[in-house]
Image (cartoon, rainbow, N blue to C red; front, side, top):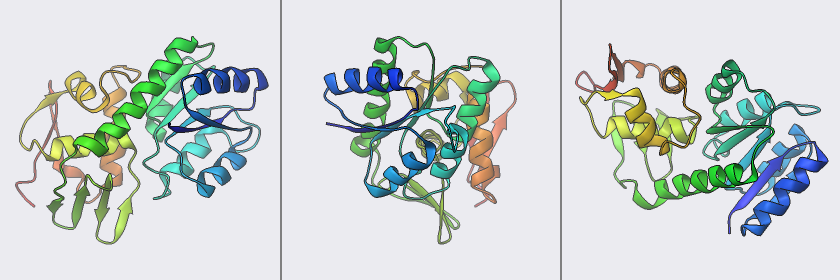
Length: 230
């Protein structure tokens, strides 16, 4: 049984999500505001958050930012649920650290499928990641904790960002195309646009400075990891 927190202020959608997620065997808690959702996340652990973008106090954007800056919440997968369907909003959500994005009105089967894949991916990191830490200078990539540390400071990576960093770091020197990388770190279940991986890489580089140059852009191909100088 997985613990899922739904942060959503529309009663009809709250009821729809709770009923169908509980029918799938999940334990579901509903919070109607961003502040209440953050308080609940700090009160007890959750396996996944379904986060509405438009909320009455702190909106989904701010909640996402706060979660990704908190070492205790950063690894929780976030699926944003919003009525906004423009590509720019999809990219924005991913850029803020969301792991996936579902557009209202959504089909229940689609939502449940995305929840299932996100939970499976998170558990897959636990089950299959190498137990060996990767050390590059002061950068430590720890697959057991799903965390990157620079010096004494935990880097607030999303699950997708961590999987991207870990995958590239364990395959140094190999150039991977954008869609190939997306398949490897998200199983092809994320919202895919031409800019999706670039957003993840840009955020990852910004967070791991001064080690951002480890992730090299290969023109016309994608990205590769180069630790030769460290």
